[in-house]
Length: 576
Image 1 (cartoon, rainbow, N blue to C red):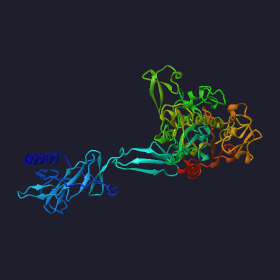
Image 2: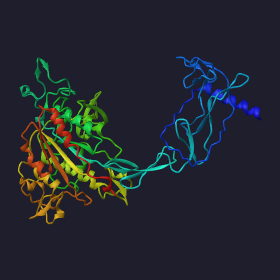
Image 3: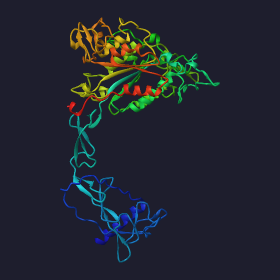
Image 4: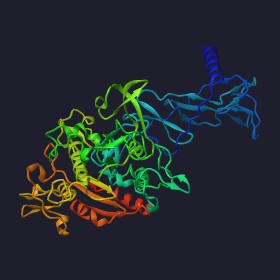
């Protein structure tokens, strides 16, 4: 019986080594060892290895030259200078394989017949209920399994409990400030920032006024300033304020996403074009009639009708990601990269009206609905600031702040941070987040210029941040109080904005469809224009009023980065 076992082992090990290389797993030195475990006996067996040669070098047991530049041993083996043979290991040591099996080194010896014994690792399984755990570079222990390896859960809003990679120990850790525990992971608690980017025709003005005159191309030293569509003016040194602004936004967004803010991208109302030819002015887009979303019926509350939900893509180019583990940065940056492509990806058509947001294009004489497979921001039309603030507010209160929405799972809430509890959506860390609109423009309102009009941008900014008319303090938002039936906040302290009396209950202040109050602050960034044009909007909206210049893109980047990077609000102790 002894001889038979000896022969079987020789065959198994020698054939295994000839078939593949040995995968050496190094153990980390900083994993704690359970000193309460039973002592492990040395169960190594007397293993004899045949000598084999391959073009890759000598295998285990082959003769070798110690300390030479080329020892003669195959990769993964080393030359034992005591016996001048290739071995897998030199000294008594233990390790854990990738499969979690403990192995012990059988130190090489030379038998009287000249055959090498040992010089390789031998399996020593830990047995049921235990796992192999590296204790140092040269030792491994068999510790009791107490949890599911790598599984983590939230103990509280600020504390996560995680099982180690071996399943042998659980550790609790407190999330850093500005983070909270979601599904076992300490993640950033992010503010919501809607970036409203001006896509009016005036954005095609040139940075250098001497080239003003043609919005599509100019001559510079006899060479066209703009390259061919779709790149147009998307180079390193843009000539138009539109493309310079797109470049600045792209740089800032790429560096800001992943911090304490998440972004959605909004433009002035546009749709894919079914008629215009591709050009550097509008590409394959057209501004919508009267600067309104499709079907806009001038209602002050969009819940009762469907035009807003049906046509949200007219303004929201990129929505917020639906979950914490999603990242929409690549999608946003695609709208700024100077690349645009329209492809026939829909069904047959005979007119543009059959293609919804697309266009009916001829493909080998047959009409096929074509849609953007690579979108891009394009500019044309006027400057509907008031309507844009209104649309951003409706998007946030209806699709982002979904407190109370019926649900069947966390995913069904569809908004970052919300979880499903008792069949309704709740955000356990809502007090740690703010909602912002950052309105970037090169001009001022073109449609609703008077502050007696509901869709005037100053009135809308005040409504979103503080509320309009009121009966009690609870009718107001933010830090505003009800005084003489008007919500008084930062705007009135500065004496800038007259009180606006709302004509209906829905107009007074923002409340989401499930009755939860919503407050949204508006910051205005004005390009190449007097900042005081839009100061009233910013102050009424409880935000900042910033002026930037195309002549100083570095300062433009700095101000935009500050505006898009609000600090965190909550510390770990605030989450519980």
